[in-house]
Amino acid sequence: MARFFIIAAILAWATSVLGLSEPGYYANLTWEKPRTLSNWANLTVETPSGTFIGFLNDTYPNVRQFLRVPYAQYVSSTSTMWSEYEPTNLLINLGEIWTPAYANKTSKLPVALFCYWRRWCDWWNRCPISDAATVDFAVSRTHCYHNQLPGQYLWQYVIWAQVSCLKILMKLPDPKSRALNETSLSLLDVRAATEWVYENIELFGGDPENIMLWGQSQGAALTHLYTIVFPDEPLASHFSVISRPTSVTLDVTDAEDVYEDFDIVAKALGCNYGDDAEAELNCMRGISWVQIEEFINRYSGLPSISFSDYIPDERYTFSNESKRYLEGKIAKGPGIRSDTERESASTNLTSTAEAEVEWDCVAALDTTRRYALGLDTYRYYWGGKFTNISPVSWLGAFHWSDLLMIFGTYSKQVGPISQLEIDTSITMQDFILAFLKDPASVSGLGWDLFDPHDANGGQILEFGKGNPVHNITGDYLDAPCWNSSLKGRING
Image 1 (cartoon, one colour):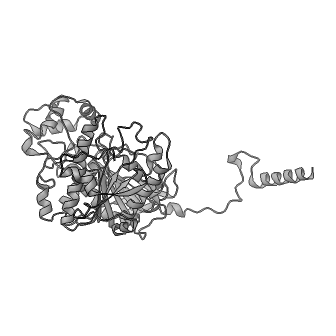
Image 2 (cartoon, rainbow, N blue to C red):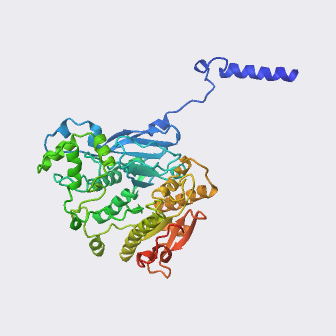
Image 3 (cartoon, one colour):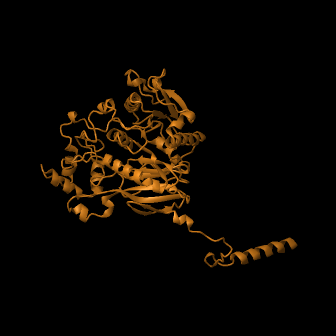
């Protein structure tokens, strides 16, 4: 009984002192230690282009985020409807930046500038942070899908910024209008974003001399093209090309009319002005992006249409990339080249294997060309097959599924998660992070430079197949590139 009264007395004292006898909004909190606003003071960053006020992420309060950061704006030499009346959010290209809450202009953290592709995603609809904790790096990205945001593990080491490369007209890489003077709009967006990051990221805590420009799929294509177009002053120090498509430059010798795709869409949407290309373009600028996207998504007629390839102008895109390599006009800096086991997964395994050869040979050829110029390149191959990511067997290690490992967002997929999947993600992040911080350091982890003249055709890391990582050879993976009797490696 005595013990009961002692406990009751203690509870009564705690209730009185802590103010627990009243509802929360009446509680007496005088017992708390003095608070500080020091964390808020670090949320304001002054740059030459303006003052940016960030906020702490709701889920991960040790992450500082700056959303809707403008890095390029529509400018006209004359007064136009676009410059006078169009809402600001359609005139400015926006990016996002995530940093550790403590980061400041003296932090000198490595920077990951991610060029991502969100082909049919509303350009002002920002992708939500899917998995983030502490950031020790600067990052920038360009297009929004597939949960392409750094995972909890990666946030501990870098600043993450991402930039949107979507255009005013149709949000496409190359609208293919006769009235446009520029045919490589998204590539110019990447340049504008890289320039902005280079000039401003130090104020957010990043190191402008340690920027990794990278991308996947169309983002990889833009990263690749960037190295060819800006060889002398790339501003980024190293480059990562993840699953670069087989071709994104239009073969003008094989096309009767390179502008036909745009004409088809324009006519269907009521912008048929015959030979008046300027009127056609202005009309299309007035069409809702929703209507444009709906038509393109539903179109199944002949001829087929595509806005993911570029018309070579021999200034920003080149019809003969081999010549650029022979002339040494390639951005200097280490690089990553990779592809997945089933880049074009389908139930037709024969076509899947044939397509795989094409994708792999792009990476192999590019790496060989870089080697001839003395440029360091590291290769990896994604072979992981996990049921929460690939619920049916024919999907396998499909296009972009490796990003779920790199960003740690595999846990967002529905289904059981194996220890191998967890370990593979951590291992991939270890390698990518090491490359981001110091490319020369990855050899200490067992990632060798790719040497096509090696006795076994060079060393390539394969992730996720049987164990987190092991080595395979160029002779094993790339043999179908020079021996047409061999098939692509889609089953190991």
